[in-house]
Length: 242
Image (cartoon, rainbow, N blue to C red):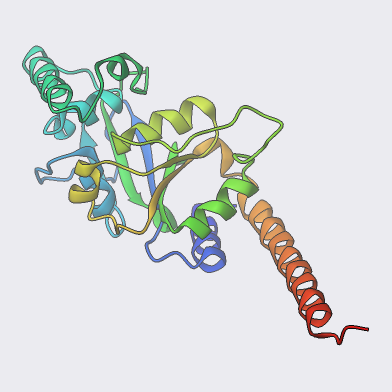
């Protein structure tokens, strides 16, 4: 399924309030993709802009949030690494992050020169990941159709801070990553407070439209089953006692 078709399928079948955003990590600027000549405070700030605009952002463009740049797999210069350590130290000091968590924060292991962001509907590259804002219901549907919810397999968890850690988590496990987000992500991406961040790895996009159709049909059948069961219970409760 082409990017445009997949974007239309996701929006129509899930009734998304925001368009899906695609990103691809690259070693050099792709031809024809403009560089975003604008300073933004964090990696997650790119996501909101990418709902309507295709652009390339260098590694250095991400350095305004050293933690986010680190999570995204960009090599930090010494000054920015010092800034990162100071920032993490402050987070631990106010107990926003526990010290034992710091070494376990997910990070994309390969280093890249930059990233291309843009609307999935018009994205010219093969996405490494697709970023969605979802309600609990929409997250439930996507989690089920992609195999994230599976009692026979290792159970996944909903991630927390930093919100951008959902990207390396999705890429490394090759399954969706669902996140509450973090204070910075909520602020800089202007994410609605009643929605989750859900990241789909590119390797799951093939066939996702068909899987989504099947899952929604299963949900329709289950709703009919539950309605029928509830109606039977209501009739039984109203029947006169003998």
